[in-house]
Amino acid sequence: MSRKIERLINLTIALLATKRYLTKSEIFRSVEGYEGSEETKERMFERDKDDLRNLGVAIEVGSFDPVFEDEAGYRIKPEKYSLDLGEISGVQIALLSLAAEAWRGAALDTSAHSALTKLRSVGVESDLDALPAIAPRFNAAHKDFQIITSAISKRARISFTYVSPTLELQLRTIEPYAIATKASFWYLAGNDLEKSELRTFRLDRIDGDISISKDLQKYEIPNGFDLFSQFENQELVGIATVDVRKGKAQLLRTHALSTVDMGEWDRITTSYISSQRFIELVLWHGDDALIIEPQDLRKEIVAKLTEIVAHHV
Amino acid sequence: MSKPTQTPLGRTARLLDLVPFLATHQGIELKALSENFEVTDAQMVADLTTLWMCGLPGYTPLELMDLSFESGFVTIHNAETLSHPRALSDEEIIALLLGLDVVIASLPSDRSDLKLIALDLVERLSTRSSIPSKMSAVPATPGSVRAIIESSLLEKRAMEILYHSSYSDEISRRVVTPIELREENGFEYLWGVCQSAHALRSFRLDRIQEAASKSNVAEAIPALTNDQSHGISYTIHAHSRPREVIERFAIDKEEFTEKARVVSFSHEWIKRSVLASAGSAEVVEPATIRSEIRSSAQLILDRYETN
Image (cartoon, rainbow over all chains, first blue to last red; front, side):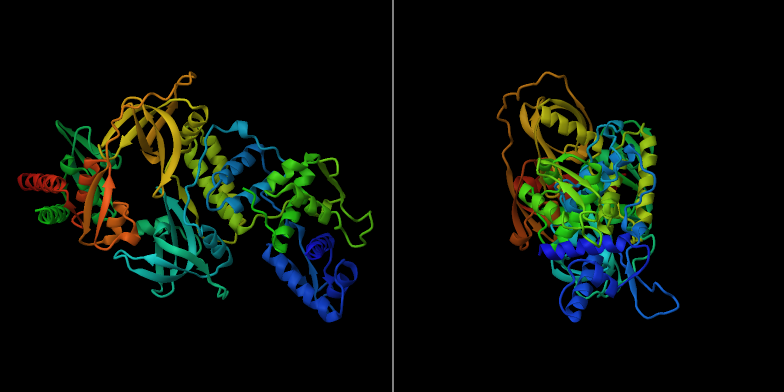
């Protein structure tokens, strides 16, 4: 095993150091570790190339002599191989370190850690003292979280079992576009192949394992795709007027657009995305919150309350 | 904590990253080096030995990398070709982009200078990734609050928090001696002794609006008055939207048919949760809670009729 690793490292060094394309025969002649019959060497080299590509090392194929297109040559361009974030300061390194630290013990720990090692190898001392004492942290998401990011990177389909609103277990296969988190929940968006439309999934509603498709049917991620703005466009935003008791209904007040003092009560206006969610939020506040407008929200909340009374008679 | 990557590819990646790290950390202690790469010392020595056999074609001492580590301190020379760190992979960029988002959200409002620097980094990383979609993170807990909680925990110091209790719908200041952080149902909770209640309490982190460490004096954990309310056991029946019901009442999916027995610590919380379920959940028993919910809903209904 060690010999294979040595060969991969030596191949990387040789292809990085060369200023022109190296032909296969030059590689076999000069890079240590290519032994055996011509056929064996060919097979070794093909596998090594795939392995390095899987490590993210881009090997360029070209012809070193454009006139005689006889034999392909190979090289690794240093500017493609190396980390290049432009001019970077100690404060920037410190911010990136904090960003990586946020994953400690959480889903992307491994990727964050290897990124951190690369950043520490730039040779710029991290200036942590320049930052305020903050410690952002991610919560645990799904155990197979890393499979999702790896699938997005490779543009590979994933499959999983999803819990439907009626608790049925449905097998879903999607082309993942993005992951994002808000208010403790992680979301995954992608093209649902069966429904052939964009769908968003909450990670904690995925039941069991996530599997990545072996068949590399590549797909395109829409440029600039943003999971959250997708959310916002889903439904029309409405404006409601609600009376809330003084000192109560904090969750409604935090989103108030305006507040008018009416003595024992305050009259606030607030925007909402889904009438269902908004009614739930108002009901949470019991008799401390009363919808004044719009009329259809009032009708809906009255219907829900009637249902609750009927269930509890 | 060590998760050695022992596949040939994993080891190759580590060796490639080891060279630039050594080049910028000449003379690093072997132990510190193994820790950084999360491998055992023996594995690190094996890695260094392999590297020592690598270099430019020719492979005479002039071309081979020159490593020394017998003294317990590691140096590397003659390794210029590999001495630049490798480009970040898309997965590493995703981790950093999401991380930067929570860093930005955690910065105090008077540090817009740092925010600009971080936003510039987001821009730089995005252009270096092959992924055209946006990864974003809105943290549940502001990092500034978390930093104070963590340092108070570490130093076993009391702290004052401004807490929004969702079930009593009140914002109050409390002095808490922190004990530990726990995660339940995807939310983080601070467990500690609330000095105003003289009792063990849990506080959901995203509802702590402000936090400040108290004096330097280490305060002993006050004696607990044994008021820890006993759990209230009740039965929930889902009439519709069962997924919402099991999530709201933290019912185990495997144990759920149509009804489930659940335990909660607060009457108030049960009542509010059933109301907020908007007709999809019913408390089957105990009868006292049933009638409370009924009269509560009736009271609100009456209000809608007169207003």
